[in-house]
Length: 352
Image (tube, rainbow, N blue to C red; front, side):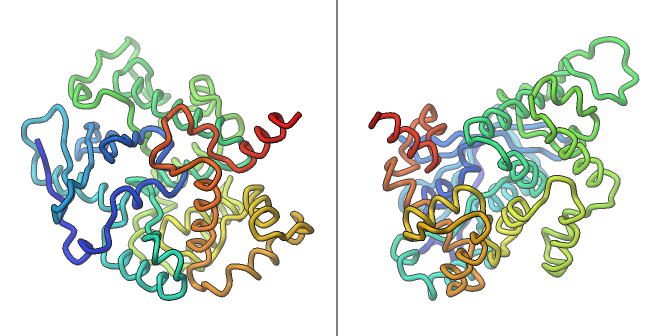
């Protein structure tokens, strides 16, 4: 069956392709972008914690998104609202996101002309936070693999082929028939991650030290010591959010800035080796080093305050697309190469 997510005042500015294909998260499992149909497919969570596959598209001339729900003939009102809420979050369909984009375009003419301004994110803040951890100290190829492994783990949990650590079940559980609604694994929830020991997660997902960080995060969410809803709904000042994240394992400056960007706070640039490469190659700051990176980044992007990270991501996406072509048209097999460092390495190898 099909659901509708009306765009309302966003109708004139919303572009499905640009709203999705602007951040590495759209390439990470369980997201599947279809270049030919310009649609996004992935599982979403229902009110009973089971998952359902959906395909999201924006047919030309329509003032709403079409959310095709697979495998279910009737969706309850509760589940309909939950599905549309998750879609709206991913694509930043809200008055605040629209206002942020308009204000960003007032200080960044090139972004306005290109229609850039909605950074793609996950259906939940927890997924954003875990994926931010996966991005740290890792190659892009390995990050993609770890995300895929986590979704495969979730499928095994839902089918009952892997039991939670606190389960008292001694026999193998029968597969959950409700999970026939989804044909692939969803991204695991905090409850699912918290139910497993880090050794089990590593056995299936090969996350290394990140497994401990992710389990620690999930347990804090589950025991209530970390309230993601308050962070999401703006009930905490941004300084309080940063303070909370600084106390979490795995959330250094890069991961924290990435999560803040997902929350709609754009004043911190998520700087890493790609930032250093971008400044050297694109902004011709040849002498820039890890020690001077923060100062150099501020010198370029502070003029776009409070949208520094949006301006940075605009430059980074422009750089990728100059080298690789439009990200929205890449095949899934090419996703591994979406890294400036990877591209530079290939160039050097070709010249040898």
